[in-house]
Length: 123
Image (tube, rainbow, N blue to C red; front, side):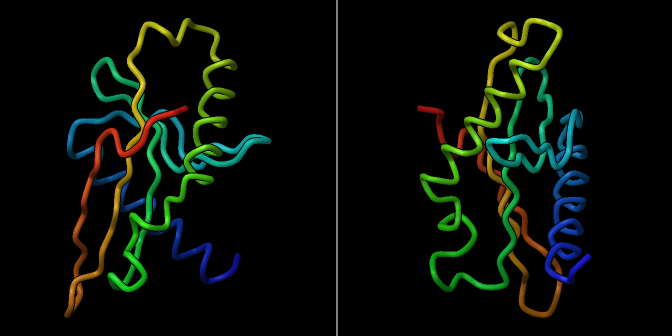
């Protein structure tokens, strides 16, 4: 496993712990299908959340949120639909939401978490 992948998994684990502490329940992590990957799939009460985790050391080039491009959003939405189609229970009883959890490294260490609910919508 290369350093970049290892670092990404470490930040996704920190994101998962942060969101669990906020009351969400983990359903899947690193869900992969032919359409792409979803970092975290979690339930927030009656809402099924598809969460993209992004880490950036600095705000250069727009920071973490700028890296969730429209093309990336479309891939996540397609992967989410594929995930929903694979469920044995009727997923349409739950509300759906696409979130982003942006992680920014503070000067001198530590991390800031910016959880954006409804960060984008499936089109």
